[in-house]
Length: 170
Ligand code: APR
Image (tube, rainbow, N blue to C red; front, side, top):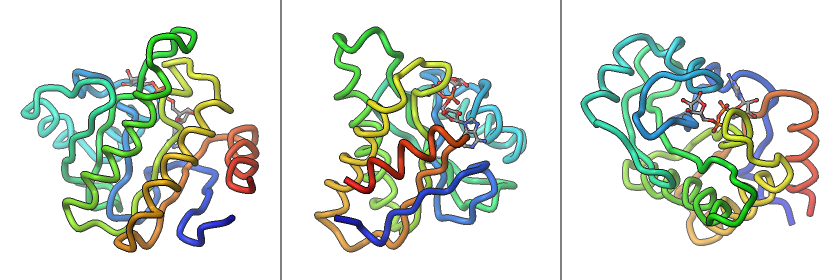
């Protein structure tokens, strides 16, 4: 069954006007490549300065900062698991990224959030498996609250868009 609060956006997450965009970060919270690099470039150097003060984030957890020059008010940095074949707790860690990001957003009174496809780039997570976890975890979390108005899955490319739409259709 569809949840009207959830949508798929195909394009650059840094363009979205939401309360928070989620960054697929590294444990050092350093500016990296991929979506992380794009977010740091669009936000400006103040974002890396705030991240350096936080000092890091363990895999599966989340931290919040300002959005600086982004249209988004905040960035929620979460560290996805590196894919090692699935036998090292990757699924549970990936689900924790989505849950902890939503918990943090809720604690800060936020009502709209955009997620990239965490771990599916440099970290090598199989796209369909990651998509299933993302959709299932967010749906389950949303079922328990009416605080959130809008959840966006911001994806890059047709293949990812199709995977998300298929997962949301089931
Ligand atoms: N908007 C939306 N999605 C994007 C964007 C963007 N601007 N840029 C890349 N993506 C997509 C990729 O296509 C991929 O599907 O984000 C997804 C996640 O890919 P990565 O950014 O590589 O993230 P991840 O696999 O979690 O690896 C994290 O990469 O950049 C480093 O610092 C980061 O070390 C960390 C690692």
